[in-house]
Image 1 (spheres, rainbow, N blue to C red):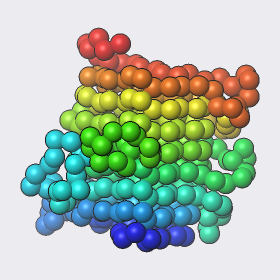
Image 2: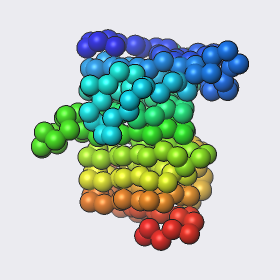
Image 3: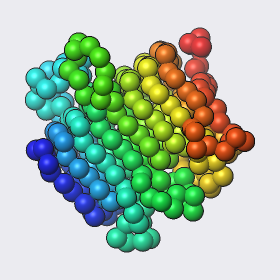
Length: 276
């Protein structure tokens, strides 16, 4: 997508792979096309008021994967989003529907998000449930990098990814543990959970600004939210090890009630690995 591209009011803005756009869940490989999804490269594109902005099913890996995904502009075949906006501004055209995830990736390698904004701007959030806020980036069995939009090694970080008023900003799960994730230099404000990671053997969550607690009291019915015991969380990992959780700045949201139950960093079930 070139600069200025805009996709609005869709069930699914982009579907890379087979599936029903009204319910674009991955249903497995077919016998003829083992890899069923292409890549998406977007710069300064806008997605607004969609149920899903981008859904990507498994795709063939590029011949060469860069050691650092921030060098990805020099490589073909890598999915990347740079300086894009993903927004929900109002009730969707079908009032029975709510945003599910701005971007959902399944079995993707070395995808990157740089300097993007994921936000729910509805003014009636207190009347919604956590699931109805939608996720920012939702990943399954996918390695990824979420960081600033500046090229690798250029110095000061000035354009972070921003996640605001979502159920989970980043929600990543894996069934095989064979992925590596980086969430760095991002701004998370007023999400039910900023970063949720499950099942990964190797991840870095560093140098992020996290404010939480604003939506205390909404019904918690999103992915895993019921197990939070009404707490809103900054960073949550489970069934994961090889952790680098460092230099993150966590605080109560200035709009949070004084009594809002929050938990900053929760690390559970590291198996036999003493990473804490």
